[in-house]
Picture 1: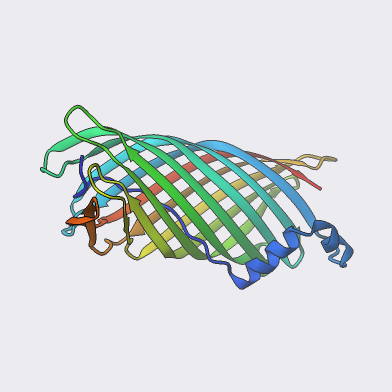
Picture 2: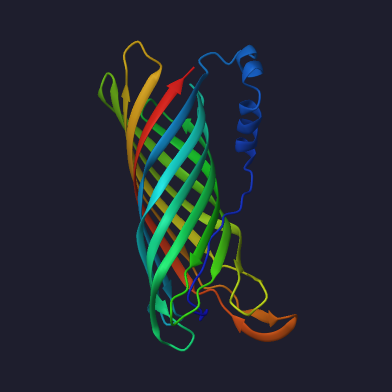
Length: 284
């Protein structure tokens, strides 16, 4: 399987937003935050596990889908958050692991079926400011690192790709109290990419750093939160959908042992992920 190329990897890059930088400083100094007079400040540690339905698509310059990947990935998320009447800030790390069924085309135009091993890591920072008791506006950044390793078959040679990119996002959140100890959170986020790249390792070629085209993301999520009386524990169930879309990147020269041997282009691609996650958290 060669790249016309058939396979790719994703990573995210990170840029700090001004307000989020302030939040990080606060997170690193919890004791001084309490001592500085921030009355009403609370902290929470969250641990989540779940499953993600992952769909990957790549398109030719004419818009025809020539690579499809589908599969279920395991998700593990660790987060640390703090809340105050003026804001809510969180830092989270999400890891996705698993395999997707690969259906694509070789360099010679022959259909190929294989398996792609996926390892995604995402570091996210979020800052929300309440507008009233139910609504909040926010900014966020996600730094994504995605590794795709297409396995070889008896008739085609696979190869690994590693993507790195960052999304800057704006969003809105709504909270609805269903019962005194049960609430529903709904959120919508829109974002665009920056600082993105792809490390491609085609068989027989030198490793190549390629550019990704302009990217956008759309996210919708629902979170049902259950509080327990006289306890600092909370349990929640989260469902959401995230779609990332990237345009084709610029053509990159390929080398063999330092000599020019051709060129390759990262085609337009999109990644859709529907996730269902169970979460347990503790406040202090």
